[in-house]
Image (spheres, one colour):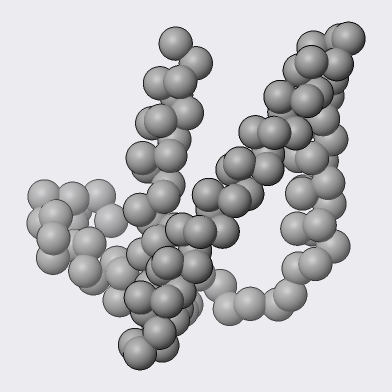
Length: 113
């Protein structure tokens, strides 16, 4: 039962991440960057699963969840401390292009945007 939400999350996010990688890469390196992204995603998933399994075998299974919370707090701290000034999303040309593409693809939602 716990696999279904994980699969749903992966299904909703992996395609978006792969698309972002492909859009960011130069045209002549799109295949290489996509392959590297998939390889890196697999390696990180494997390593995180090994760490979670090792923590689960710890005398207290709650150590797995404690470590997950600690990694989450560390991620938030890194995101807040490493922030750089970027143009607002609504001002960026890429956002406008994606919005126009979405409106052309789904005209029924044009009123909502």
